[in-house]
Length: 253
Image 1 (cartoon, rainbow, N blue to C red):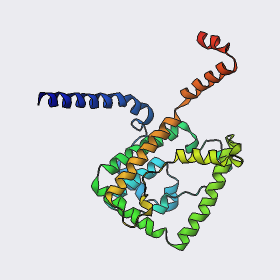
Image 2: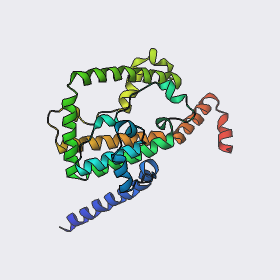
Image 3: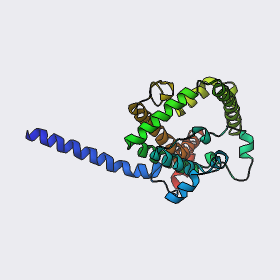
């Protein structure tokens, strides 16, 4: 009995220590969102907006409205969230960089999305609402007009990605498709073996599994968005390989 008690204490201590050790990493990579929260009155006003005005809101504002609607059990028009892929060159040609191209904004969005998923997974009622919404979307995806619309967007998405690759110097996509397929597959791993979008009946357990998978991916991308120090270490290492004498300069610095 004494041995068992000792083992329980040791295991509990290790778990607590591991949790405490993760806190700095959580703050650095995900951390609490610094985005100013919306008041209930502000959210109420935003909920009254029509589809076109809703699309002009920031991502955080949109998701705050979505969360409020789900919490109230209100009907949610998911198509209002949809933004077309558009043209990559037009998006980046403006003076202000798009949100998805701004590392600090990307980190805010990932942090906010992480918090949203934690809230969702912590409430069984909203989880059930989400599962019901997913089943409704699954049924709508079988409509011919939706199938055609999604096919057109797939083509636009392909052009957008191709333009982004070339603009950022990944010109070898044309010759090295396997390498790019590998990188894309690694950037977007499966949330679960069978996505809820492919299920006839979506349960709370299905939604929970996907949320956990999505949070893992958010963690990964949040780390990528602030990983400049590792890039600098690789740069120094390559300099040493090319010129062993450079190590003297690095040590002095």
